[in-house]
Image (cartoon, rainbow, N blue to C red; front, side, top):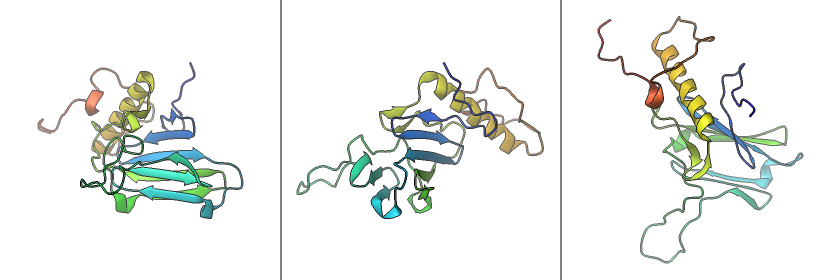
Length: 174
């Protein structure tokens, strides 16, 4: 088994058929490999608070499927394209890099270490249990670093209670 943790960047990517996704405390990054020479005008990307759709050269890569129009209820989306959790739509961006990679950056609404996405979309592109564990460890270390500026956590390892962001020390007096 190869180690998906990238030591230099601290990222824990989750591989997918179209590329990879990874997260920090504040953001979720989606990297989609596209054919070399892809032009921005061939990309159709829709970034909403809970939905994501992406088509390249008319071919769906990620799609939010709606119910048939004409029904009384509001448009609802199927599981494909519905993000695992909410994001801030106004802060979402996508870029085409070197005509071969689309990078989507989503800002999480809930930015604490306990909000570790287990999949990119609801029930799709899930991290396997080992990768999920590594993601949670990384977010917990990121939280500790944010709470303790000036301490060097670069070589730190975490064990024990780190699920859901680790222990809560906020009630302890300093």
